Image 1 (cartoon, rainbow, N blue to C red):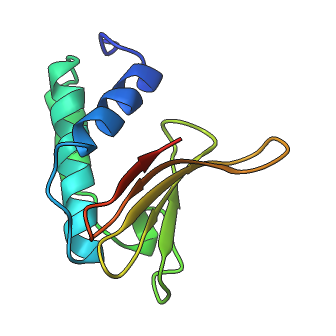
Image 2 (tube, rainbow, N blue to C red):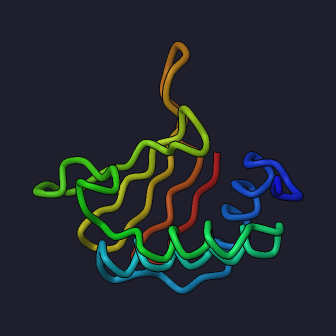
Length: 119
């Protein structure tokens, strides 16, 4: 069964919900918060239990697509939304960027200091 809303709509829901979340203090906390929000959004969109269980198993590791884990920030290129890259900084800052085109553009900057900027 397909999800009831598109990946793009789920992505914008995620951006909207991030505005109301408390700041994160670590990379792991930021990862866990993003994963939990994404799972909730997918569940409300009608995702199957099997998909949610697979999501629940994802961790902040190279095997799950994260790169530069030995640096800050590390990043993940979304397999759900091609062209979207998520950066996690060691202090909990989250930056989401659209890749490609003439220039990469920042979509969201969610800072540990509770600054929020959306492009």
